[in-house]
Length: 143
Image (cartoon, rainbow, N blue to C red; front, side):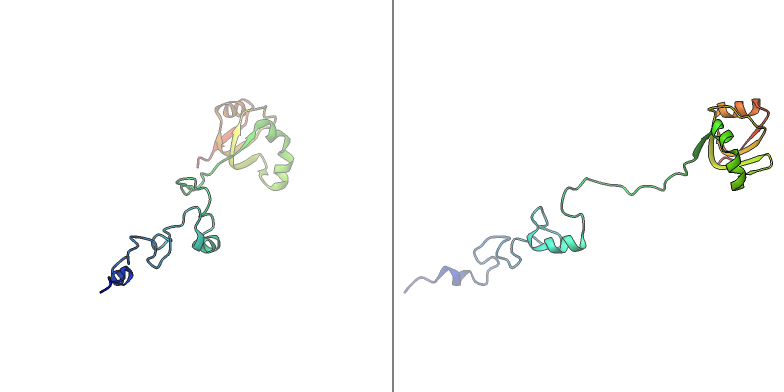
């Protein structure tokens, strides 16, 4: 009597003589889900390119979601205020002697030539001294 074929004896067993992973019906995919999507993602590359942009290629570690940007103040110097007085008047920022610079921090470069009441979000120490020495007043509206 002849010996039974090895193939027939292995049918019905888990791996059919092939061991693990390959020849289990999923090819060399690895597992389920995103397993096996390495550098050469072969069978999944079209899916990844279409639905998961940026998945392939260099990954730059953990990237946190940026927090809300803080309200940054615009900066203006005293000499700029002198130059832009006419423009401020046209824009309605300067009414009478009141200059409303909300959202600005006033810095002390230059000299203030006019007597004004300047309302701003912040003043530098130098700017406050120069404003008060010129006979004007500085009113800060802290945020």
